[in-house]
Length: 243
Image (cartoon, rainbow, N blue to C red; front, side, top):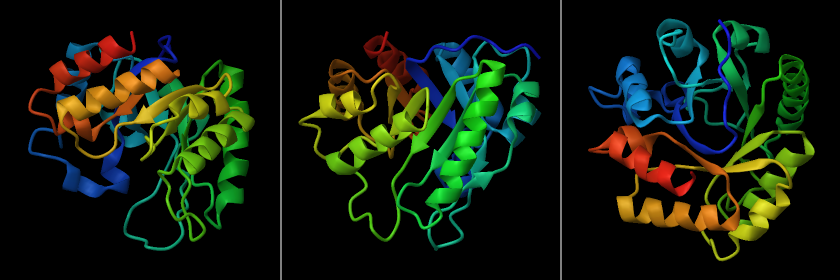
């Protein structure tokens, strides 16, 4: 399947929650991948983020939205240090029609070195295919006391840039008085804010307006869309901010 071109800005609709969060985030509608793909197409999002199982079973050439395949994942059933291992190769992602690949690194975990090494290899393999690599840069571990502090989020941005990520997905900081610094720390790596847990329309849009003004390239959002009463409208509102 030929890959579609993907913008490294805008709105990415994430549907990678089923493994790490389990089905607790889903409703009778959103548990169905067909429903999610329909929303993505109606809203004309810039990318759809799926794990390989969902991509294999539900994403096909009829879908007009570029695909991002998330290559690693874990469950929440293990309570120890965060460690997410590769479950899909770059080759397999390409066969599934991926326009980009994603990978989570938990900086600060005692398993950090393994994820850093794996990301480096994935980035090199993806580059040979001309695929952008997206890093979910999420510091976690015993030494991380506040993973939403500006200091930690900016560190996460810089680490992603230093490892060669084309796009970095970051948590929105709990103090957004200097979002420009976070964007600057990422250098030429495109910064996407994570949507996070459910927010009201006003709060979500206000945060993303600040992020866009500070130099963020977009948002990768899931729960704030498929848990919304009007997911298409909310996606279009976010697109207007990052257009």
